[in-house]
Length: 73
Image (cartoon, rainbow, N blue to C red; front, top):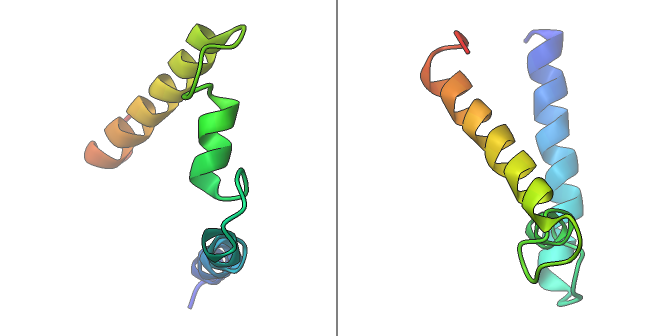
């Protein structure tokens, strides 16, 4: 197993260690999706919401294009 693969596996396990308790404790604002909704102003329209949402769409668009083109983008 390469060190990079081991690091990615560790990263996923750490994510699960944080996310799973947050999913089941029923507190607001502690899961990754709730944090993303807050940071990128998905709910409501606070100051700067257009720029935040544009950043989210651009980042996700790049990630999808990157995966679909085999890293050419």
